[in-house]
Length: 363
Ligand SMILES: NC(=O)c1ccc[n+]([C@@H]2O[C@H](COP(=O)([O-])OP(=O)(O)OC[C@H]3O[C@@H](n4cnc5c(N)ncnc54)[C@H](O)[C@@H]3O)[C@@H](O)[C@H]2O)c1
Figure 1: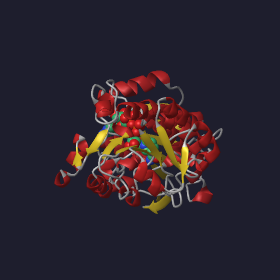
Figure 2: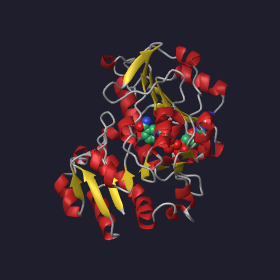
Figure 3: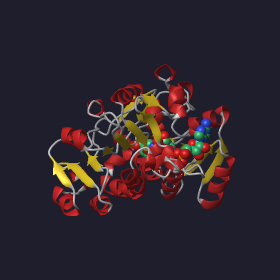
Figure 4: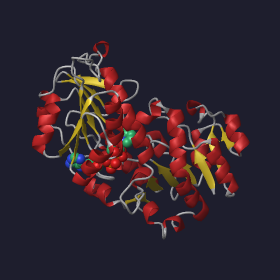
């Protein structure tokens, strides 16, 4: 099979879909790998490293899309990339369709088979291709929140860990999954007081067992969220219903109760966000202020730490990408339920139920 890797074009997106070692693995399985020139530079991988691993460097994204049987990417295809997709071509990448009507319609129009990293699901419910980026975004969310809490960045001027005789910052995290847990670990490490909210009590019980420091766990309901949001210096949105639009849990009225200069980092923005006032932002222009509260809604946070992220991504995606290349589509999904769960759009039809439910008129 011909596997194609274009350079990522989303704002400040420096990740690339494969490392040179990943190329070697494809070659060892007898596949051809085409990489757009300089696609890996943002992650510090040169054209020469890819060539030595056996890839062919091509000069444009057009060539990659025109020649490859399968396109491997990191972020969802941008409109100009959607127009390059072909009928029956396999697209394997993050998609987050339920929050993006335009992209859904564009991919349907292309006739390709779109397989989303983020909906590949193991029998225990975990999402093995979302997890590494969630770990990174969760850890970053608190680093970023700490910076915006500084006065020079428009924040309240609160130090995460406080100091002797002065209380530390209140960090409220909604969602105790992968991102929420990593955010909690970093916030606790910085000495903040942490509140973790989830509707899954078993998950809260688990965190009670493994975390230590100044934190409390809270069962998710509208009243508990409203009370917690009000005293937050940093609010982290970290919820997910796999494949679906994020539930709106923090209303605009709740945001109005927050203190001037407090910060919201809504990691779940890639699925639409769980805060009513959050909008997607970019690394170039990451924040805006609404009701006196700094809002951060960058949809590709791990793109800012590409060296770490590209390795972590290839570690997770490679076994599935190799399976797709070895067996082809649809043979690769037959008998492989986790990979089958990744198929969101097949030749013009939405086949992932929660995405279909988000756009009934497109079905
Ligand atoms: N912005 C970015 O750059 C970026 C990067 C990586 C991941 N993400 C996103 O972060 C989000 C979270 O991902 P994750 O891997 O942590 O998911 P996860 O499945 O591990 O955790 C989600 C948690 O949300 C909880 N939840 C669902 N509904 C809830 C509700 N009503 N109240 C309280 N809790 C609720 C679930 O019980 C679960 O514990 C996803 O949208 C993911 O795509 C964004």
